[in-house]
Image (cartoon, rainbow, N blue to C red; front, side, top):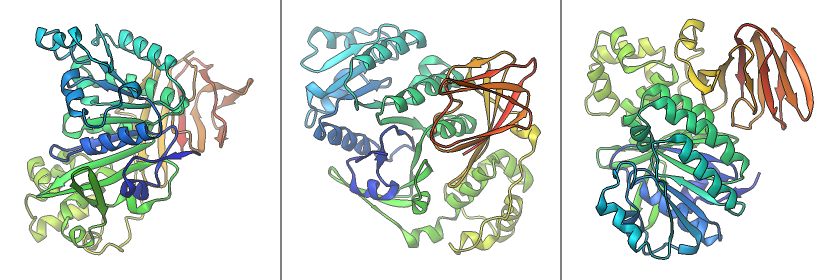
Length: 418
C-alpha cells in the first residue's frame, strides 16, 4: 500500500505515515491549534504536485484565502464554498467576494442545505480532477449545523468515505468533539481509517490515535505531547505527564467499556459533572471515590499508576444494549457498533427485508470475517453470486463484495469482525 507524508515528520513516525485511501478524522478540542496540521498537509500536497480540494462550511472564502496567502498555489487549489449561501445566508458582505474572486478557483454551492445538490456538485468536480487529488472537509460540525441532524451528516460521511477510498486519495475531516454525541463519534470511527484526538490539558497540547487501520503502532494510542514553533510541530512521548494524567486514562477505559459519563456517575453515586471534571483533570477524586470508579469500570486501580499493569480480562456486551442504538448505514441498512479497539473491531450490520446494498458493507478495506447470525442473504463477489444462510460465514481478505442482498422476509443480521 502506497504511503504519503502528512507534512510533519513526527506525525508520520507516530502513525506510520498516511496511506493512499485514508480518511482521517481529527477530533479536536478548542485551543489545540489544529490548523497547523491542515496547513502542513496542504503544503506537502503542493510539494508533490497534487491538487487540494478544500470544502468549507464554517468560513468565508476571503478569510480562508487571506490565511493561506503565504503558501497557496492557485493552480493546485480548489475551494468549495458552502459558507456564503449556508451559514453566511447570502449576506452581501460575503457575496461581494465573487465580484473580484482573484486567480484561485472558487466554486460557490448555491444550495448547500440540499445534501443532494451538494453531493452532485462535489461528484462532478471530483470527476474532473486528476488521480491523487487531496481533500479537506473543514468542519463535520458545520455540516451538522447546516443540515440539522447527525444522521444526515453520518449518511453523507458513509457515502463519501468509501468513495474517496476508491478514488485513491487522502482526506482530512475536522470534527469539534464537544459538538457531537458519543454515538455519532463512535459510528464515524467504525467507518473511517484513521481517527486522531487533539486535546489540551492545562497549558499543554496532546494528541493520540483512536483508530489506525493497517498499522501496528501501539504507542500511537497513548497520549503524546506536541508543541508548535512557527510552522514546525514537534511530537514527543511525555512519560512523566502520563503518570499524573489519571483523568484522561479513566476516560479511555470508560469509553472502551462503552459506558457514558451519566451511567458511570450513577454506578458510583456521583454526578456526571464530577466525572466530567475528573476526566478533564480539573479535580482529583478522594481515595474512596477513586476505588469505586475503578470497581465500576472493572479495572485494577494500579492500571492508572503503573503503565505496565494488565487491562481487564474481559468486556461483556449484551445483545439488547448493542442493538438499542443503531446508526443508519444506508436506506434499509443499519450498523450497531460493539467494540472498536487497537487490535479488533466488531459490529452488527442489519439489512431490512429485500434490501440490496450495491457496495461493500463498510469501508475499512481490512481483512474481515462476516458471520450471518440470522436470515438469508446473497453476496456478489467478482461476478459470482453466493447464497448464505444463518450460521454461514465468509472471510474477506483482499477482495470485497460489490453487492449484499437480503433474500428473506425478515431482517438479516451479520456480525462483522475486522
